[in-house]
Length: 200
Image (cartoon, rainbow, N blue to C red; front, side):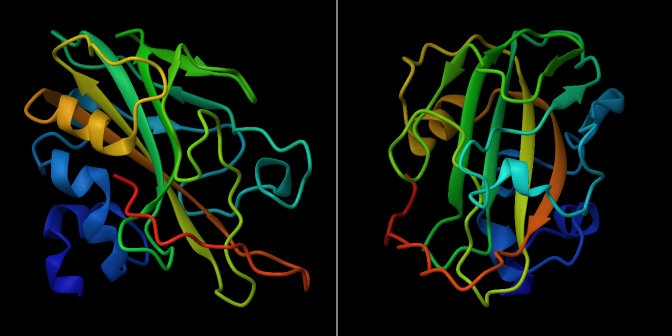
């Protein structure tokens, strides 16, 4: 229910819905940490709240992750981590599309389709960008890019899962930033076989 979405998070997101309460940011962030010291993430491919181009989604066979760039994190940051989740998925936890860590603690970017230094398992169990593919008829889903500045370097092996990453980050977030893209699946193809996966 919407009352479980923290007020600060509700103000930061557009068209907030109950699923947003389960985002990693809701667990790891606070109002003081969000955009601390001007920390922000953006994309040259879409503005916050805008629709993702099909080239980043399952509508394209060779879909890749969108380009991202971010400002310098606060002093004391040891590394950056990125979690991309769909809070509108009909699953107990947000559907995880990308887990990335080991990003340098400075102003930086990921180019379109670039493979990051360390990538964890998405909700399909693959260590890669999982292109958005919401069920037909669901309307637009949110894809929330959550960037975290951490005060430690994570000792996680590539292929770790969402739960492993969140547990490792807990208590070590210095700042957080968010960017949301939306996407509604077109066509009359069969719906994605959503797994009853808690993402943890």
